[in-house]
Image (cartoon, rainbow, N blue to C red; front, side, top):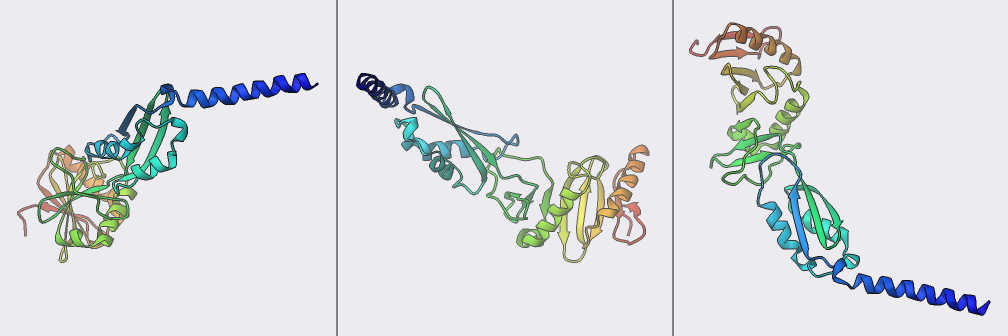
Length: 240
């Protein structure tokens, strides 16, 4: 009985010793860190290098001494990042995948900076030269200063159908003035659409019908005035 216990004791001691030995070997030491962006749009291309710089202190450390929560906290320290996912890749690679905050429009401010707009209407850091996203451009002092107006617009863009001639993907620009309210510019018909101070989703169907008719007749350069409660008026841009 004692002999059997002694053998089991030696076996357990061997197992513990083997684990301790293996965890100290180069096979389990971080010698490479890779950071990538999951989102497809081309924006904030400097983020991977910035996050990699923050993670340099982890090089040379054992995987078993690594705190994944600490890595995530460091990676998510940038306000442009929504979330980070960390993976151990044997033998010695640490892989970090970043999900950026989703932009819904891009504000062009009075300094001509391109500033992505988040879901809540908040502003993300400006884009750098060479970075872009294919989203509606917002212009106007009110949209620049008033987050609630930006959120109202984003709410509208996310509520209307993603298909059709008047959709979030067909809108090239949105202007706002205190006098006229919201004006949308849609291509390829180069239509200028007045929606006024009330972004009514119910008018989208009528606007799409007008745009479809204009497309069938190869009409362009028209103003579509949807500010009226029961009708949509179409006129040439140079008409008073």
